[in-house]
Image (cartoon, rainbow, N blue to C red; front, side):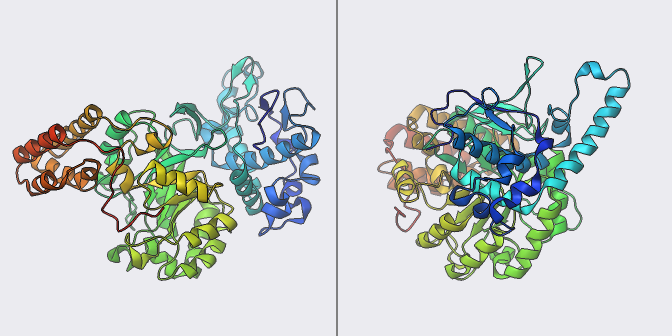
Length: 521
């Protein structure tokens, strides 16, 4: 049962974080760095003993001392929220920190020019205090808690007004998200929902899921909880290219949650890029450890990092010591063999990864053949980080079958399946499939957007053909017109074939997805 199920009063966060004894929470029950998740909290990662005394008064159900589901349950809640506060707070940008009630005095206590000076002092004190509290045992405990619980965070009230704990709260897909920082409009650390909720992410696909695609897709097909952006690869010159900046600069429509992805094997390059992305307002960056391209892996990037576990460990140690945004990891289960994954999981477990996204293939398999579900099962068993599955889910039925096999995993990343059926995420949540009118409008807006962006309808046609490689499998009787579309050499020919497809071919309930060799489930 979820900890808030049956609660008689909404839990309230109180601003007494400074009363928390970090050492007591981290080591309650004898848990050290490697065992904080279980040592501090038993099977569910919930602290007792010292952690409870340290967190006294931090989380109360309604009035002070009121229990939610009995005294023991209320005690558990205090400990887990204490850990979560310590996990969240160091990642909040400075401009959000100074608005937290813990760091802001009443306005009538400050006058004149003292306000700005005191805020600056608080900003520095807050950052130092929170960084000092950021320790691996705390993160490991937090990861265990996130795995077991979905915890709501109602914004506290101060002087009769609601105060955001970590920046802004914005609804998306009928769920609320906490956005990091005053200007972090699109980066989420925690996905919240009721029991049984499934969260669908859009995988990054180079040449397909660029900014324009994400904007148009989210406009016509809601349901995606997070969009991961195709990777950018920071170089030694420490400058984002114009193309990268077009993708990264937050000038699009609000409400589209996006996470930039970095491809590098140099810790200093990663840290520079993460710092610039934080300046742009992002609260999370994703590390690419999955790209199988030969030109990438030959440089030790992407999946190439997986063949050097010691080098990977040093790389992660350097970035997690200094990075000021949340870092999630997208990885394969090995370079040559899934047997490598056990050691990789141990490496990942030493660091406060915000989320671990696993594509259960090795680099040499690229995107072909089956997936190693036994390797993913190992991650379910051992990973302390929130876990997300990625790989060849193309229908709501397959997503449901996956959930039945792995009931504790609440996140899936969809790539080719979501390109081939743009409504897949909504359908997985119980929504309606794409109808002909909406799908045609989606196509036309995307095509015209590319034509305007490229200044060429011919180049727009070429980009749209990459989409049609997957989208055509959503239509029945596709063989003849699909081949004609592929052979189209001019925009006029292309537009005529698209018209024929939408006029003549019925839509299937689900994509046939015959670009893959066989279904996974």
